Length: 243
DNA sequence: AGTCATGTTGACGA
DNA sequence: CTCGTCAACATGAC
Image (cartoon, rainbow, N blue to C red; front, side, top):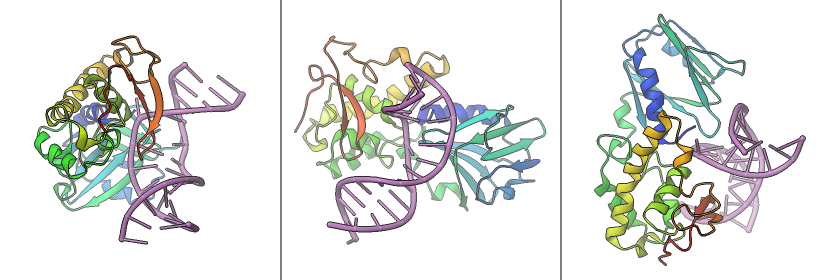
């Protein structure tokens, strides 16, 4: 489910409840979820892979991790982590991480680090990248403080698109190319969003889970890369290694 | 049917 | 203190 674009979809689906009062709360979350009862949902935001339900004086942060899911105006048999009822419908979360953030949500997040946000700042991302020149680019792209919302699919597709080997060192990648990668992280993410909405995401993958390179036809390498040890799919013919 | 993965945090030991 | 490794969570696609 959950890379940045998928959270944007979740926000859009929750948006109709903005301005409405929570009439009932349920779920097995250990957080004080009853606090939302009787409160008006003031806003729904996202930051990277976080879904933020904003109330007066506090915000509930929902993270779907790897297996989390949600249903709008529907339920399923598995244990409910958090369910919010409104007069005109309900939102239900399953297997999600739920956490309360006290006070102003703006104090918790740097919106300019979120690739899906209007305030996304590629220059700031470049500055952060340059601070860690010895980090492999496959790890840097997954760094949520730099590219909030980028997940493993986006990582693999962006690196393939800009022809960079995932094990390249950030500081060895030519500046202009690094900048192009940073820009593509956002551009690709919005393409991801459209494809996901139209249920055609997977058919647009050119590297992720593929056995052969969709550009040149060579066999792709599948390997756990970097300190994060997340799987990378890459073409040693198309993607250059900078070390 | 077994394996594996679009993710993150915290514990523990070296 | 930092690093690496592991466990934990737990579903669904193949």
